[in-house]
Length: 90
Image (cartoon, rainbow, N blue to C red; front, top):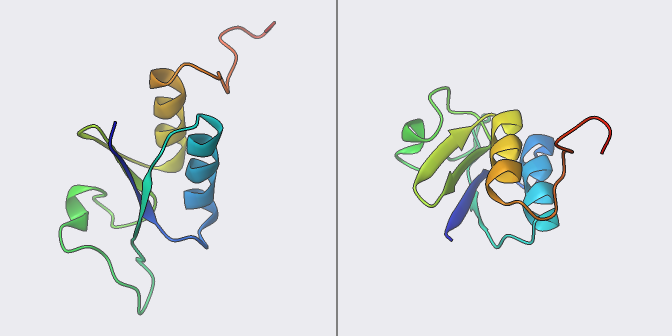
């Protein structure tokens, strides 16, 4: 599985995705993408995030953006350990 996370180490939103990937024991590459003044984005970053914000994720050809969408997707496709219970009682 090839996983690329685009963002900065300082970003809390990127950090949330990193923590989920680490909890799921998924190896990933953190690609520096800094949309802020003076920062640098990869040349084709608009293909990953239409608003050129962070984070963005590529996982086996699937491209996602927005933190909550990314973490829900990761939790859905990588079952163990479940980070969100399937039922409220769990």
